Structures are given as C-alpha cells and as structure tokens.
Image (tube, rainbow, N blue to C red; front, side):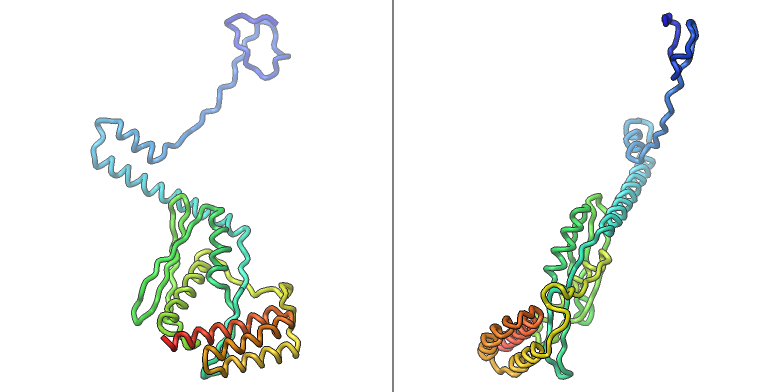
Length: 270
C-alpha cells in the first residue's frame, strides 16, 4: 500500500485501510502531574515577584508535606515488619528468697530482646535508641525512640522505681530497673511480647520427682550458705550432679540462684 506524505497512518487495524484513506492517530493520554510543595517553592524562588511572606508559607507547607510523607513511610514499614515479627523466648530463670518466701520467674534478657528485635527492625529501615531520665520520688524512666530512615520517629516511655529485690544494693537496683525498662519499652514500642520457652528445647515437658528433689536440695544448700566461698563450694558439688540429670532447666535454675547469691555477698562486702 502506497501512501503520500499527506496521509497519516494512525489506526490499529492496518489491514482494513484503503488506498488514499486518511486515518488520524489516537492522541496520547494526558498525564496530570500534581506539583509537590517542593516544586512550588522552587518555582516561587525562580520568580522575582514573589514576596517573602508567601515564600515562607510555601516552605512551611513543604515541611508539613515531607513530615506527613515520612509518617506514612513509617506506618507502611511497621506494617511490613509486623507481617513476620521475630519470636522472642524467655531465656533466663530468676529465683531468690525473701521474707515472704521464694520468688521465681522467667524473663527475656536485654541481650536476647535487642538481638532479635533490632536486627528485624533494621531490615525495614528502622533504628532505635533509649533516652534515660530520673522522675519524681527516685523513679527511673526510659524512653525508647524508634526512627525510620525516612525521618519519622515515635516514642514510648516507661518508668519504675528501683528494683531492690534479692538484696540488691542501690547501684545493682538501678541497673536492674534500667535493663527492665529498656527491654520492655522496646517491646512496647514495636508491639511484641516474649514467649515461654517451648518444651522441646531440651528441658523436657515435665520434671521428674528425682530431678526436682536434687534441685530443691541444692537450692536449700545455696540459700543457707553464709559466705561467698561456701556458695562456690556448693556449686562445685552441685554442677556435676545437675548436669548428669540432663535437665537443662534444672541446671540453669540452680546456677541462677548461685550467681544471685554470690552477687549479694559481693555487694555486702563493698
């Protein structure tokens, strides 16, 4: 098919064109681009007739727009983080004797929490930091600041008094409270909770009566000790017997009390 320079080949079905036919091409779609506040500021700065007051209003609008975009990026990234959050198990057993009896519980250490949470946050462009402060009445407060790479930050603040459980001195109590508030403010900031360690990690679903009797024997010996040297001597005898039970939790339970008792004797000697 021969066509002159005046002819416009424009239709999609070329086979149906007849010699001499003029077909106009469909126009390209018009793309509407909404200028950003930064575009308006740049345009205003290029003009000589824009007064300073109007320029300042445009720059203020730009800052608000950028802050809103950063907030949206933070929200989107946090939503992606929550799709596959890290699992944090309680990795430490604490047990000590008070006037009211024996207090025992499991918790996730600060190292465990930070290792799991921070690495997962970094994959989505987040970083964190803690800001310590002292409140009224000797209270300690910790603010966890989560910041996204786009610039938006959000804060979570927790406070508590000195943790003087287990015979801690003032410095130990302050460090214990600080560590507690750091891990819990980080968990609260990202909306996560710790979990009990599953039974299939070597502990066993239940502790036998024989193992429990061994644990109670050594706990009684440790709690009845009078010196640091005595505690260390007790542990030297207890450790082999506890290892022989192959009960990881039993070993950790007694060891934790031994370490706590030694720390108490050290603190008392200062």
